[in-house]
Length: 89
Image (tube, rainbow, N blue to C red; front, side, top):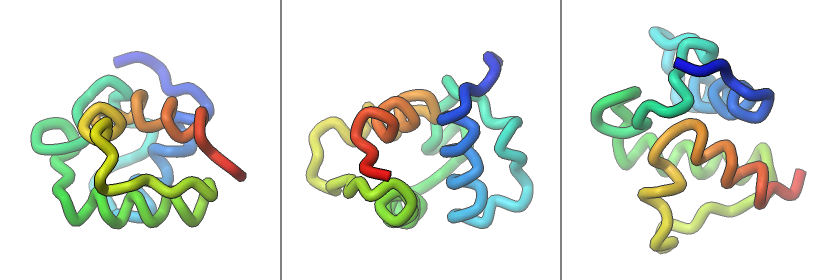
């Protein structure tokens, strides 16, 4: 597992806090591991909650009809890079 960048740690904390993942520490999330199914085991409801938290915290709206969503949400690293590229705050 590689070390988390500043934005990855920030997004990992957002994931843990917004989804109430009490059994997971943000620093323990592998930035390359899958967020859904295997990996963190998130589901579609978690994706919606996470998208709302991202919108609130970063001023950037993730769209449910974006064809790149599976790539964007594939790992903490890809999600963090996408947020950093598109964030308004």
